[in-house]
Image (cartoon, rainbow, N blue to C red):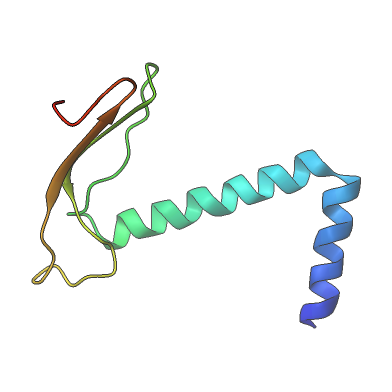
Length: 84
């Protein structure tokens, strides 16, 4: 079953690349939505026009239990060095 599904996915990618891209993006968005629903206290990305920019507050590893995770603030921007 898996072998035939993999072959089908390869065929769809080659014959309908836009469709394969849309399906992949939809799958990624539903995974993020499911995670956000199951973990409402976790931070979630907000996309901005300017960039590149990565500015996180309360960042932690998603697989660590909340009682053991240490939340951190991280900020990275274009042209930023260690004094930012």
